[in-house]
Length: 396
Ligand code: PMP
Image 1: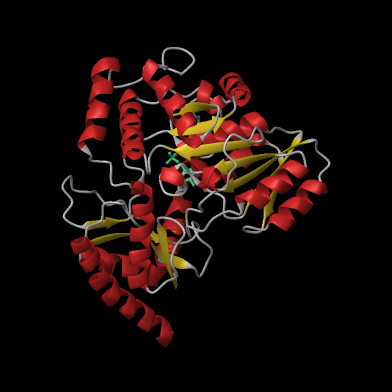
Image 2 (image 1 turned 90 degrees about the vertical axis):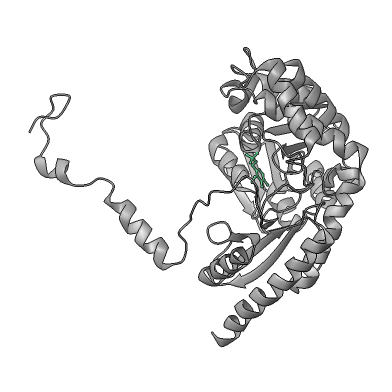
């Protein structure tokens, strides 16, 4: 038989479903309790949200919504092009300056997402001639950034500064990056930033810290973990972050010195070839930042509420907004999450590949605006669901 381009092809090749492997994968994932489902949210959610990353509870704040609307009225619904062409508004530059000032960095550069910020900065600062050490718990976007950079990559054991030191010292490449989250997304634990920066500097490398879960939560008034440990403004340290968590919007940002900002504008492919962040997101993020500056105690309220949730879940006090309740088996974690949901509690459920095999968990995120009544319901529901789930665990 003749194919579209006139080439002879065998009819058996044409009738074979080239995507039949998808069905096999789906069956295997169902059997392992690893199938993922999209749930459509209602606009007015009656349930209590412990699943989102809206740490400061600002996503529906009238000033944040107004910030988005005002930006849309002024600049339109989309940014219309790459940041290098038509996609940069005065609002983008204001946000960059305000965020940089907030964390104590010289400059900021806004990307379309935190994912794009990580891909952009790592691929612009490392190449074939470079070496990258990344913490084993680094976010997927940093992992992908490593692969895309074509640098030689080493994964250091989680929070292991001595291993990072050794790997950097043994390298043959001149240029090197060290990558880590400040607050790790799955467990909410903290990177040993001060020590990591010390060995990074001693070995002539650059430290890239993803503050997605640190900004708005850790540090004075939510300025992040880098600020908290006294590393703000260091020339060999780059912060990346998302605007989609504490800042209640969408988008990403790189916070570093002017030399790095200028290099990213020239070289970061996810900056150059991606459409600029939509004005609505820029306006919303500016409003959220302004609210946080006016009420800096919002950041410590997140940590207080996280401690409340951890207490009722029977797990150690967390160091971030993330309360991780490890249940082991993927199906058990999924069932517990469903049980919470059925009782009006939205919780996250992390299973492989997001977390290692056998460590599936409920991931509960605290919000600054949780009320006493909501905390009462949370205690009741978690008490019941976790007793059942942990009871199961003992039987197995
Ligand atoms: N880094 C970390 C640690 C994250 O948790 C996330 C989002 N889940 C990202 C980067 C990506 O940010 P965004 O969602 O803005 O692309």
